[in-house]
Length: 368
Image (tube, rainbow, N blue to C red; front, side, top):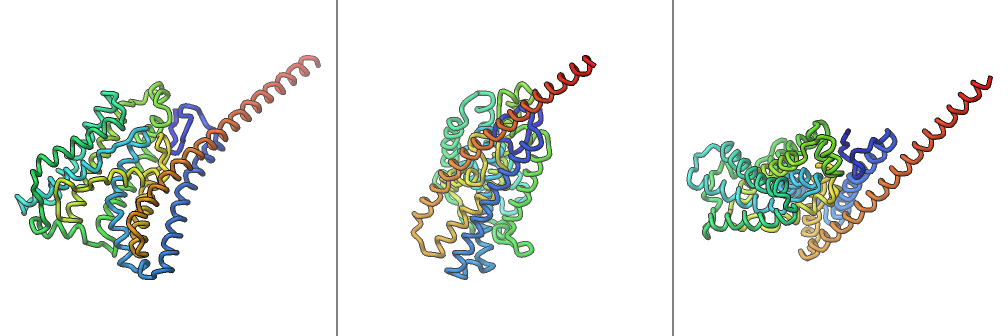
């Protein structure tokens, strides 16, 4: 079976070139719509308040969206398999506080080693989720809701009411949260590198394409010989590792760390993924769309602040965008599925007519 990264339905059913182009075009339109929305947002807000388009303002938008975009990339790996991970915010909080504790106790600790520790801690959290979902067969929503509270509880028990302040962290580590390379925030560049790497894996490697096949039709994927359980566990582990990296980035960005770090961020991540065109029912979407969704939601927050709009309006707008994205995703999925059915029907009709014509010719030749 050939798995296609943008196939919302019908895994295991061969598609001809026209149908494949149709599905690919739908995926591109979804991401193009986000780009248009971003352009409109920046254009309108910039016209009202030109300072919103200043280099510093644009840099702040990129910096503010970097962590959520990174988490959205990892979440996409899980969502395309028809699962979800609600525990990412707790994983971020646990690894961020862990990084702060290590640096506070050992100011001279190598930064790469601490970051690797965050990655490992996040991967361990992802492994727990993967085992619960893949082997334990616990619904992902239930399993990760439980681990959201479990990991946060571990964080609270570890912190014991303590708080790590920026003054306790080495300046070389804190500078990572504000440093720029070629005018772009370093944290945004890290997210960009991860985005391109994960996007390439999903689009070019068999293991990446198999995640889409699992999300499109788990039973067909299993019959096709795809190691479904192993791939689901791997998706959760990769998502957890990226959440651990986001924890290290959070520690460098904000400096002040306690047991409440990143509380509630899982909702922003899920919203970014869905608004970015990743089907909540699995099998469709790209990490690029998810990252654009994170950028759009972050930009809306910045624009509302510049326009001095009540912060509660941001939640209302984010909720409206989330509902609209889910409805649009369902409508597009139904239309694409209908188009594919019509195309398959026409193909069968053409094959049948061709067979009848061939049979008629054979009869005529025999009569001669």
